Length: 226
Image (cartoon, rainbow, N blue to C red; front, side, top):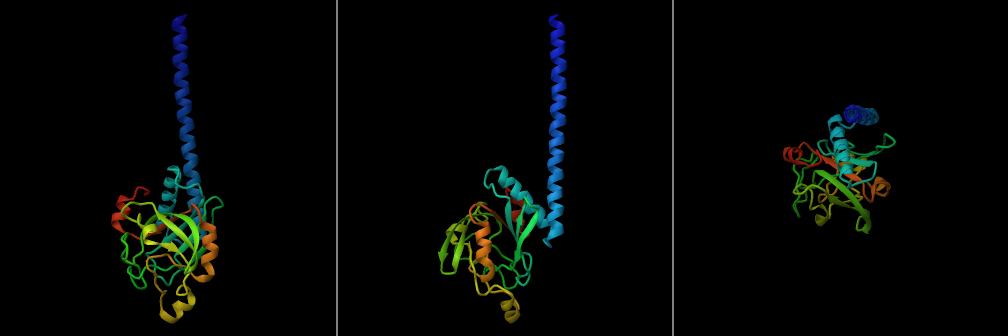
């Protein structure tokens, strides 16, 4: 009798292991399917480089897993593009849509029309790459502005100390490009046009990720979010 009970329990254990394994595989496949659908949908609705989009989604997933953000919004900047192109996107990942697409300036120390060098050091006037988290808003010399907190040590961790914030600037927009052949430059802040700054700031304030991209080898090789 005891032998039969032991045999039954053994078979039951095997059955449960097989069932749970099948369930985990199905769940994993469903998650991958959802991620692919999200990627395909956003790719079709924007002209963001697929490689950059893929990295941004990977960073968002990792940050959400770590409990850093609960938001389904993400802002992406592709600094490999010239300032004359619209290189900032805001995506709603839950609704699978692009919310904003506009121009953004880089730091004067990073380059002229193209940003080529990036820094985490104070007074460098350079932009920073990597993953940021938006914080609180405040009223500053540029009007309504948004604090940024760098999440990557040695890469952008001094952002708040450096006062790298999102703010409006008159040197951002088509009018400036037409007169100067490029956007104006900030002290390292991702500055937006006066028309776009306030609505974007209000949309992404308080715990939304900002993914700032450039093919910088050290960051790509050492980021804990990639």
